[in-house]
Length: 213
Image (cartoon, rainbow, N blue to C red; front, side, top):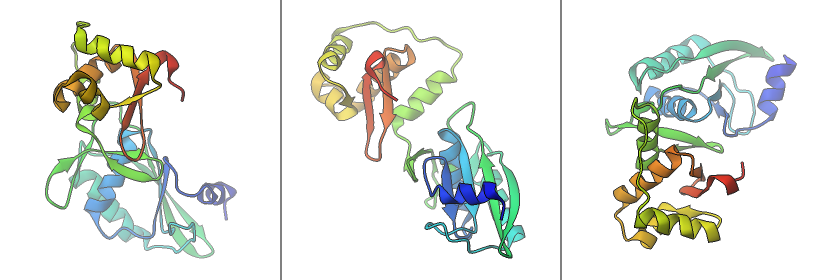
């Protein structure tokens, strides 16, 4: 066994590594491709169980399912590179998905809706409307011009005395509906004043100069 692939599998699943026992649903695997592309990229190993046990696959069949997922059920199409490995006579596929330069990417779900996902730890999480607004702003040819009004001052004042805030809390502080609170946060993030991290439950915002990686 190659030491490289052995070490990779021994890491277990995390934000940039996912195991799939097999690929029997192109729409389902499209979600993983999109989540990696919308985050920091990652590797998908097919033919390995969640616990790291090598099971093996019929690589040609699995590759065609994967290719269908990337080309038919992802928008835009997701590029990937692949390598075949043989471990104790069992074939597996290593799929490398790069981070998308212009986000977001969407996948077609079972209810025939195009949705964006992100990778958080070892899970694929539905992207929030705020994230999609932010991606669209980042790929726009227009700059960000914002006016610091009462709502912005209320939020920044709160963050000066608190380490972080959620979108729900911003709505509570300002009395704004979610979509307007999202617009304020997108402006502050785009100008580098506020940063954010995503956990399994929500986006968490903080002042940029106090944010820790």
